[in-house]
Length: 363
Image (cartoon, rainbow, N blue to C red; front, side):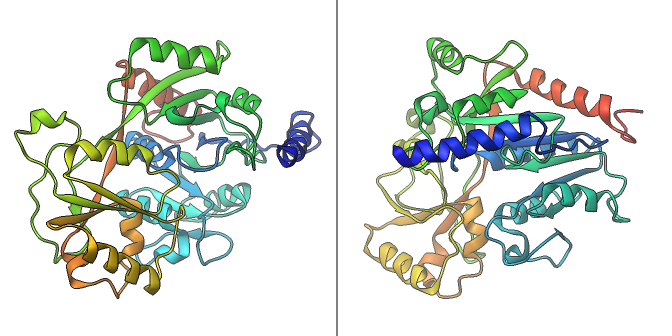
């Protein structure tokens, strides 16, 4: 706790310098939407960024700018046809693969990144920029600031680093235009909505939304994977007509696999987690550990991993034949609760419409 107090003092001084104008925040003449959090990892940024990109990319020329966490390159990089995951990082690479008509770029200096996007011949006429994980990057003043809060660890119940997981005091939520409570249970009760709303104590100008994770069919990580009969993970087990996954070795390199474990457990005969750090780069020794864990688990068994981890596993050459034939990734997306998808979509589209330079929406 004493270290948290010192850390909090440093963050408070930094925010004060921005709030008083000593440190300058820049605005840009195009719509800039920031998606981030004030906690360390695990709030579901990537599927929310993907949702916004899927909403925008058919209407406007859209760019996504990220820091490119744990990439091997430096400075500004614009993803192209031959760009590797090592050059831009796992999350930007995943988005680049899923949204080929979105410009994906990485730059630790987000202001420099936007300036570069607006100056390059191929990107100078973009209509909107989505910033990934930029809530603390206050050198940019986004036109739409979206804060994600994990339902399982509401920020008002947390403490500052290193005693807790908060990057800055809870008062940092006041900068948000929208707050999205992510990873909610599928069976969340009306009373629980009200409790969370009361605890967050938002200002009247701040919009509050709740989302759940939706699972899609397990997909093979490698082409030699065996066919798999699988249940619908979004349904109660009794509605899957007896279809159940075998024993599952759950392989994750994400900040918090808790929700995934809870959601998978009712649909499989047993689950054994094997966890690595967030954004972990798998090594040959990791492959040996995975091979051994799969060898020891009760058969029949499969390995389930996340879409983000699957990107990094593709480069691991020493995975055993049994692992490669039985490893699948679980695609996810988000869904808005309380029938508020339309409201969220309209807020985003209206913002881009009113502030865009050349978009079809503006026309």
